[in-house]
Length: 395
Image (tube, rainbow, N blue to C red):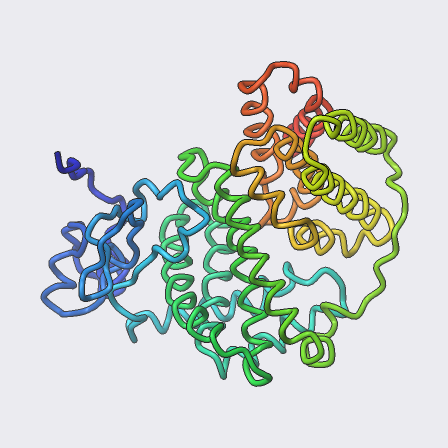
């Protein structure tokens, strides 16, 4: 049976009708005004495909939902499932001017972790965007989402724009990845950082609608950051010696975590891993230990270099073995417990607009999943749940 189409009207009308100051009939997937003018319609800018989508000749998915509908649970591949039927039109140029102004005067400063890398976000990345349209799309998406989270009354309008620009940028980005070279590696690296930040930020934009679970979000982020690692590996010298070197060339001192509760929790995690390691394959045991080593290092870097804390936190998925995420996808309890501890690291970026509530959601959701597997695992999550409760009360 075909799914029933929702007849509930939008509260705002499509973006193009609002810009022309005409009444919108609010029909999806494309309003009548946009059809008659043969222009792109924001109601049709993005489709979330089902598990086995079919794609029409115009690039749209035949089995899809609107941007405000349900999003596919397979977030690991969700970014490859967005399709925009129309490119950005001239009708959006005023909006683009607004977005670029917002990025240059506000968003870029929130991305910098220190004065040394502010210049990268304020000058180097925009300069690369003039040469690579996919990076310009990334900047527009980032500014759109930043505005969405600071203007609740217009949240959906700017969230829709963010998804549209992300979809547009991802198409060219994927094509360009097939030929990484000196001329494009900086733009590719900049865009990969931006879409990772977007993956952290999108769940907060959807708020209480729970369109995407924390599990799906973290899997997507791991896969996106794996792409960052691939670009860094293939263009290591160019990136470290080029205009984005400030993102790499800084000391990373290691210190022991200062919080006694953190130290005790990490010690208990290692002890439980060693205890369970007696009954698992040595290779699997080493995956756990390697991930815990990276956790301890990241906690130590937050203490030793607090102004670069966000970088150390986001970098953790890049450092851990890829097999850890495979175990997490399979519902491995110890891998899930390690991700609960990573959630505590994410609480340190709770005050960043793009990291708001991400750690809290990850801790709560994964702790509940562990409890369903076996209630005995709940005691291992108590430290993390208490940390998340404190952060939630203070925010």
